[in-house]
Image (cartoon, rainbow, N blue to C red):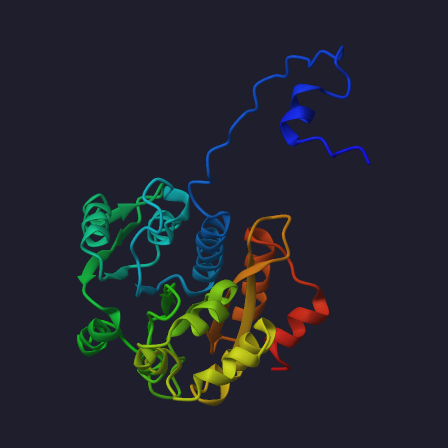
Length: 302
């Protein structure tokens, strides 16, 4: 039997000895994406909705519980900045909240650049106040609500663009029940980071109290066996049943324009009858439309 050739022999005696390997062009190396595409989708989605809604209200108060820039190098992904830049300047009071010192510094710089009075082309004056609130929003929300700076008659929007488990359910409850009937509730735009939620649930083994505060109940383990769609629907139902909102929908934020991977669901809770239609329009323009039958499921039958 002929002995098998060692690998060194094979390398030293190529199969086609006269074949010349061509000079190939150098492979181009691409750097990693500086920011997730969905961050811009989220920011423009919120801006698009508020821009449309204030055409109806002509006034409003904006609360951003986690307002710092998610990527300082990309201003287009900074929701607070985009909302401040909206035209017309009918939102008159802003509460920009953040725990990170670095983000607080960026917010203060943003607030300082904002004129206290805006004058439009017709000479109309629109005064506005931008307050930067340092600290954990789950704590500072009490000071904002107790300040009496939010009247029952003013349309109020609260963005909760949390990092997975940052926002306590008790905080959402405080916002929902701040205004008393028959006034419309504070409108909540709540981001649910569904793209990595299961991994985060399984990865949190010690600090389980954090999960309980986020979920608002000790039964958060049941989420591990649910699909992303089922979790979004459950949260949507909680806004309706537990918090008493009239209209609640869940809107998908995709990984990129071509992907069907959902990174977030934006839970939109409002008492205003025109809000769902405006939100659908904003989502289709800033992100992309969901199939009609799927969106009907995520908006319920109300």
